[in-house]
Length: 208
Image (tube, rainbow, N blue to C red; front, side, top):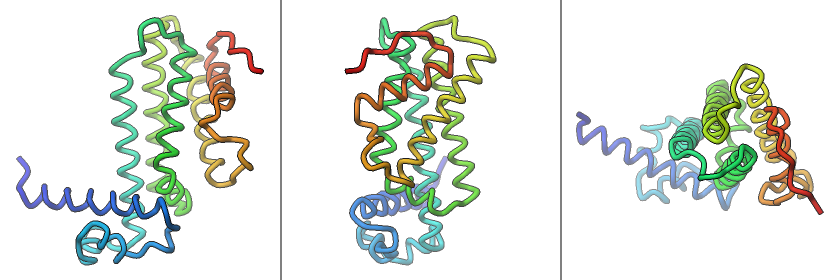
């Protein structure tokens, strides 16, 4: 059983990371100081240094928290299963929308992680991708049990990684508004990409 001191420490860390993420929505990382984060959280700078060491440590912790939250959300989605009557394409489309919305909401932290080019962050990114593939595969099999075998798994992994790579490139190199993932046409194109790679042979919606 956890001691009260441990619980307070975890609560303080969460409070600091939430404050950091909120500040990053309006400012660049170089404009956010340790004192800013501590003040936003209603704590002292000593609390920041005691838990993270420095701002870099706080960035790593924020990205780790993001990875863990993403994994929890995806596994929860998989446990619920697809809606009644959903086709494999419907499942892929829902995944594209959900992944894009989550990435956009936490874009400041994602950008920081990419900028650090840290091996721990690279490992966290791989973990997120692996969980994405696992949960999407589980949902697709629930919708269509014949989607099995190494070719399906390899193709699905390739499609998911490609779609995620496009999301990362969008953050690093803005494409003049061409790749806004709340655009329905872009959602359909990414859905096409994943379905084609995984061998899901459903006709796409006709675009106008």
